[in-house]
Structures are given as structure tokens and as C-alpha cells.
Amino acid sequence: MPGRSPSDVIKREVREASAYTLKYLEADVKLDQNENPREIPDSLKRKIMARFGELGWRQYPEFTPSRMTAAISRFTGWPADGILVGNGSNELILAALVATAAPGKTVAMPQPTFTVYRLLASAMGATIREAPLRADMTFDVERLREAGRDSDVLIVCSPNNPTGTFLPAADLSRILASARGLVIVDEAYHEFSRQSAAPLLERFDNLIVLRTFSKAMAIAGLRFGYMLASPGIAREVNKVKLPYNVNVFTLTAAEVLIDASGEMEGSIRAVIEDRERLKAALDVRPGVEAFPSAANFVLFRTAHPAGEVFERLYENGVLVRDVSGYPMLERSLRVSVGTAGENARFLEALDDALEALDAQG
Ligand code: PMP
Image: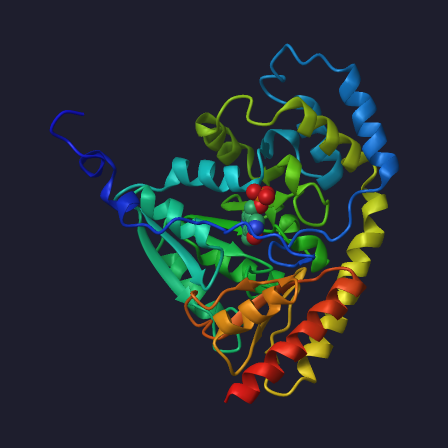
């Protein structure tokens, strides 16, 4: 590029954005990414591997993955022409925003929430409108309704990452009824709340529901997510989604998991029970404030700088997420629900960390 620097070419919105990154750290107890602490059963892994061995690898996947959308249609009860699949649900967030966000359009979201929404919508030149959560981390429904009335797209993550907050269906219906444009509900963690926005799809053709197999379904490494929407919306978003975006291995694994979804129930129940135990254990610790969660993680705050608590935990082999850089989350950390043993190690390490930091004064 003679005479030009990359910054002449890269959009201002992108240059000004901070990257969504995660430092990859090894730890004995890894509770920083809201993964399922349990692998899928070995019997299912063997079934997936056997099916994979029989597939042709030479050819592209089906252009429209109709076997998969039919399987998801059976799984969710929503018609196949309103279903899109993605290489993780992140890809479908991107596709939905490519189809809608542009200069002159407004994309709204609560804050704090999953940072990818804001990053992508601003990179596409959209105006961002934020609806802060209340101080107790619950959704402010009136603010969300106002935001929905004034925006082209409203994205609500429920249960919300990183707070665990859940938006009840009655509140969501009111938001949908008065929204000027689309309402995207990111349900990456819905299995742990035992509730879903999907039944509202029948009534509201401006609703998009996004889901993932990275959390409750325990295949984050294989990257699979899907979108449920009215067929008209799905058709438009499909135009800007990359072709062949989900590879045959992932399609095979997801199909096996859909057929055996009952087998995942035990691990979901264990996470929900362990989440409640973890929250109760945090609640009784002096100086710790934990927030109610409908997801597979718990947000908590201590009297000390989050970075220092993080470092002490990490020195003890426990990795959590320091979320103190989010708006409203000063001194806050997010811990994913692990196995009972991992949660116990986290609590022990937290006690040590807080004792040492209290002693420091
Ligand atoms: N939405 C939310 C709220 C998330 O927390 C995540 C992952 N951390 C995703 C979407 C993306 O998940 P994936 O791309 O793995 O489906």
C-alpha cells in the first residue's frame, strides 16, 4: 500500500474498538469460560466417531443443511424454514447483525452484557443504545421497552452473561409487543434456566432466538449453534451467512446429540443443583456478594480489587473471569459452575485469597 498505512483502510469503528480476547491460561480448575464441566458420555463419542468414519470428507456439506434443520425442527417444534445453523452461535449473531446493522440504524442492548454484540454492531457503523441493568443486576424492563421502541434491533441475552439475570416471558412479551424492530434473544444458557423464549415465536414475527451447543450440550470445541426465527427473517439472514459454515463432523455430532438429548439431562440437573450450592456458599462468606443466576455461572463481588482476587485464585490453580472492566461490575468476578470437587477447590482458594487480601488491609 504505497503511501498508505493500514489505519487509512481499516474502518474508524474497527480501529476504535477493543478486541474481544481471552488470554489463554492453563489451570487445574478452569472455571472461566462457562463450559460444561462434564464431557458427553463415551458411548455418544464412540457413536459420533463411527458415523464420522463412514462419511465422505471429499465433498462439501449439503448446501442447505436440511437434515440438520429437520432434526432441530423435531427437537424444538419450530418449522425448518425458520431455522439456520451456525459455526457456534457467535456466527449467527454476526449474520443477524450483517443483515440489520448499518450507519443510520440503532442497535440496543442492556449493559452489562456479552461484549460481542456491541463490538460487531459498532463495527458495522450502527448507533449503539444501552439500557443499564438495575443495581441488583435485574433487567430494567421499562428501559428495555423504551430501547426497543427506539431501535431497529434490540439484543437481550437471557440468562445474561456475565450476570446470570433471567428475563421472564411476560416481560419479554411486553418488550416484543412495543418494539419497533427485531428483538434477538440470545439463549446460550437457557437449559440452566429451564425456560425459553421460543414459545413466543408463534406470536411475534420480530423475535429471533439464538441457541448454542457449547454449554449444556457440552461440545464447545466443535462449534455449533442455531437460530429460530420467522421464515421471512431466516430467509434474509441466510443470504449473508457464509455457505457451508458448519462442517460435516460438527453436523454429525450435533445430530447424534439431538437424538440423545435425554442423556444430557443428568449433567444439566447437576449443574443447576451445584450452582445453587455455590451461590449459597458464596452468600455465607463475609464480604462476598453473589447475585442470583439462571445460568451455569455465578457473578460475585468482594471488597477487594477483582484483579488481585483473580491473581490469588490463579496462583492456587483456579481460573475464573475478572469481569470488573464491564460497566457496573467493579470488584466483580464470574465463576463457572464446575464439578462438586472443582467448586470446593474454588471456594477454598477464594477463602485463602480473601484472608490474605484482608490481612494486607
Ligand atoms: N452468547 C453468549 C451469551 C455467550 O456467552 C457465548 C459464549 N461465551 C456465545 C453466545 C457464543 O457461543 P458459541 O459461539 O460457542 O455458540
